[in-house]
Length: 51
Image (cartoon, rainbow, N blue to C red):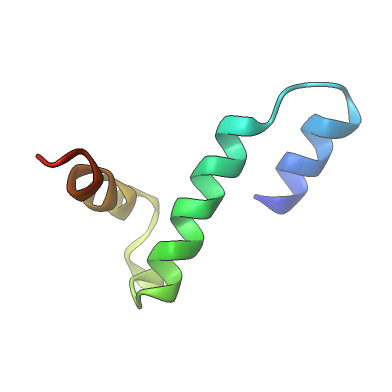
């Protein structure tokens, strides 16, 4: 993700959403869920939205 974000910035493309996704991924990893893959972000998003 860091490389993708850096590349987007270097070509002048907004990377805000990618940075937000990376923050969520980092949180999942810190919480011990790094082995669950990208789709585990939906669990975090569901908790955040209250559903």
